[in-house]
Length: 285
Image (cartoon, rainbow, N blue to C red; front, side, top):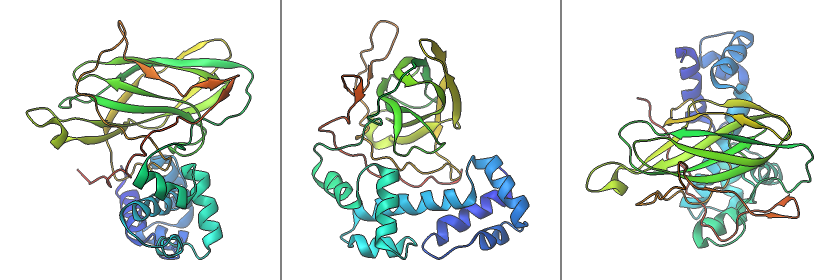
């Protein structure tokens, strides 16, 4: 990644609570605003402003989960000057309100957001394989099709896939609406050795993959997982706890895919799952 973009991302991660402007972010990269904005989007897939907004919501998720701060105080701590604007932005990105997210992280239970419950015509399928990087044990993967290169509400189709260590597994996302979507993955993988849970690692898909879906056809797409990097957009959607299984028993030739249940063609949120913790911030390698 370009070092100027790395400097800008470091600035955003350190100063997200300030009223940070595009000019200040570009100055941290030692570039003009115009050239910096173009370069940043080429490198990350997002504008600097959208990346900053995502970091703010992700940090708010952390504070809601790990502190007793009020929602109002958290909104100001992450750079908002209006509780209403913060609540609207948080709900739109995470899929649940800040207060509901706090209840889910503490108590679990029903209410995690699922794919958008909208009637669609012209549905297709995305299918392929999911591969883990070497040196990891079994993994549990959340895979979804999204309208943006950020794992945020809403997805148009999603599933949870258990992937065994050492070999790819296949997946199939059905009932994906026609159009172009970003195929994004988030996972937690066990380590190897006598204490697999002690070596758990958050993983993500290797770059936002745009796929085009056509009605009544299968679009092939391979997903390769890797450790998270500082330049990766944070995960905003409230996800189920991705607890890697001790043993993966796939269907013949395939790992199992567990899509949200359907009801008369409408997608519903997956019920009675514990929300996943906000993923730890990636560290530069």
